Amino acid sequence: MTSLREIKTRLDGIDHAMSRVGMMVDQNSPPISSSIDPDAFSVAMLMIHQTEDSRPEDYAASQSIHKAHHILNDQHYGTTSLASLFAEIEASLEARWESANEGSENSGMTGLDETPRECQLALHSMAKEIIRHDSMDLPGEDLPPTLPPRDVLDHALDNYFSQATSILPIFRKQSFFDNIKRLYEKGPEQTDMAWILGFNNVILQSLNISPPVAPPYSSSGERLHTAQVASPEKELLRSLVVNYRRGLRQTDRLMEPKLVNVQALLSMVGDILVLARIQTF
Amino acid sequence: MTSSSLLGFKLFDVADLFQCTVAQESFHYRIASRLLHQACFVAKSMGLHQQNNISFTQQTPEEAMEYNQTFWVLYIVDKAVSLTIGQHCCLPMYDCDVSSPTNDISNPFHSHFIARVELAAAQEDSYHVLYSSQARRMSDFGRSGGISQLDHKLHIGAHRHESLRDNVRNPNDPRSPCPTLQAYASAALGYHFFLTRLLVHRAVKRASDWRQCCSDARACINMLQRLNSVHPSAGCSIIPLQ
Image (cartoon, rainbow over all chains, first blue to last red; front, top):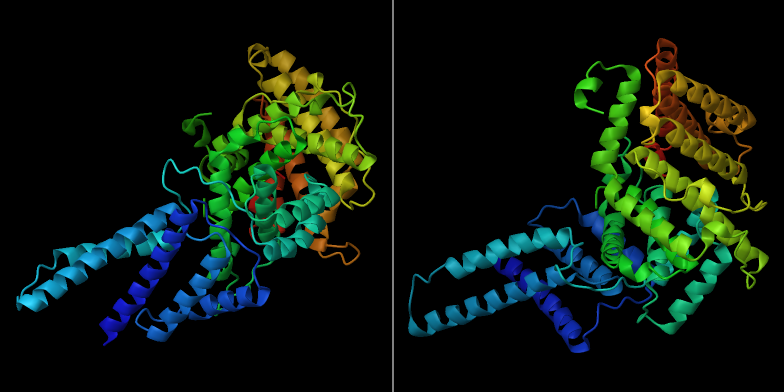
């Protein structure tokens, strides 16, 4: 029974991934982020945080984690093209396995060749690891960075403009707010990469400044390094790293003689420090 | 710098090793350098380094301050990265004509910002006098003269901004709006000051200079340890970009 439940859980995950891939293909556009309900975001973070330490065979916990991840994936950047490809391959193998299984049952054959199943399980293990560290697009993909969720950005601004920018002021507060309003009112299909990277990097810098979401002490009383903080921040960081990587691959779009391009590039220099420290780069 | 020269485990070599390890393994300096070069290129192409000559007539006072501050932040980061890598900077002061940082009364750390700009200028001078391609052919006597002048400049700057650096001794001062950030800003300033002086004095192999280097290296490490006790892992954020 347990194995069937696991299979069902995995199939649900693959089905969801296939739906997203199908949407992407139909729309021919990168994953679109939308503003999130802070309560839903907090619930998702809490669910992941509470169930992270559960045993792998705990069905309810794994369901909870899946649901939380789906909430986040729907409302942040979605999966990368590499992870999507893995999901598509898995689904294809699963369909072939089911088809072969039905055929063998109808003909009364026994001793079905387990090779396709083994391949699928091996691929699933690989995909699970990649999705866990899902911060890579396929080589050659030129997906642009996308607007981060407005609510997350709003939460980050106070920290950033009261602390980070005081020592080395890169952005002017009013100008920053004006452009937030301009870009978010126009909608998610934005091409102003300099400002999008600026927003993304401000969130990264504010994560570097603010205390960790989880209590700063482990259960044994040791003080946690920021990089060891529970996965809620890591989920957000994954999305920010994806955006950063995409911006890094397309810096040729920041060559125009405009102040915002200088500011975006400067903020990216500073973010290398943050990303290296949290070891996600 | 070769690994064999670092095996004597002198204190300032430890600081050097730390810097190398950090530079090579943790901070992706090649990427930082590439981004910085591009930022400087874009800045120069729009005349950000010649704001006194080029007329930005459309600017409001707030926009003018933003342009001014962005240039000086770029100037500071340029010196920090290029000195760590061992290359000449992209924005040499002889080719820039920008007013001093605009006084921003809303920023409680404006004095730290001014101090960092002055320190960046000292870092540029240090590279030009001691580590540039021409400077390597200088005699020890000429180099010693350069070191004395640079040390004097650093001494004057340190005295002028002594109160800013001293705040790191009282990281939990309740009078500060943000004691942790105050400690961080002061520690960053102090760290870069001692590091700059260390780089000045290690250019010649004299016992007196080496003693100074030891003292400065010890001060750098103590400062990072003190900062980490206030804000864990923040010490690494100091190096080298802030």
